[in-house]
Image 1 (cartoon, one colour):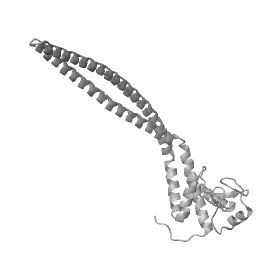
Image 2: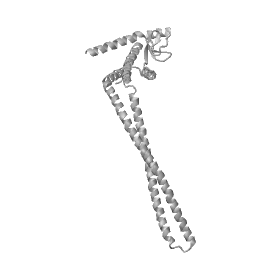
Image 3: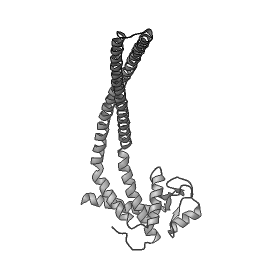
Image 4: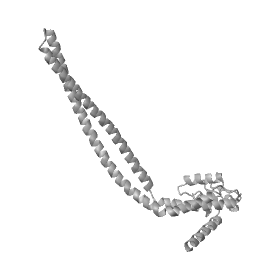
Length: 263
């Protein structure tokens, strides 16, 4: 829907912004019903992803360890074959030099077998350790998934209960956004995002800002009541409107709410 071409007066701009604020505050209220559930769901999902990454890495390390074990067994088979070969050659030696050479080669291959068996034991211990880690990670994932299912169920239930109301409010807010000046709307959204209570436009109450509660100077109060230009709080930057304009819009909103309930 394209923005309307109508040029609005300052009072109309302020009234539209305040209407938008009332709608946005209602949307914020609905979001608050979800509490920390959305964040908790994201955190549990992130934990599951991290655990899955750890499992993937451990499985990769497990494959490497198993490959090393297979290579070492192959190395032992080669050494045993050489020992058999050297042992058979000893029956055919013609001098001590040849005998000593074959004896040393057999001793060397036996040392290679001993070293390979040691490496196999080390890698098998690593395999056991990695398998235990993977098992524990899988158990953790199952627990996290149970938590996630519960939290998602609670969140989905809340969203389902408030979906219709939130969609209606968002549609109304969108219509107002389409008639608000682009720069003014951007300013409104920026303030709303930064404000702890989500209030971007507030009424002056008891000579103080309705957002940060700091006192407003008498001259600024007069300027706000004159509605000739858009003014902000010198302390928090929120857009200011006079209490009368705020009350008019509050009463109008309540009347519409009552009429919609009666219809």
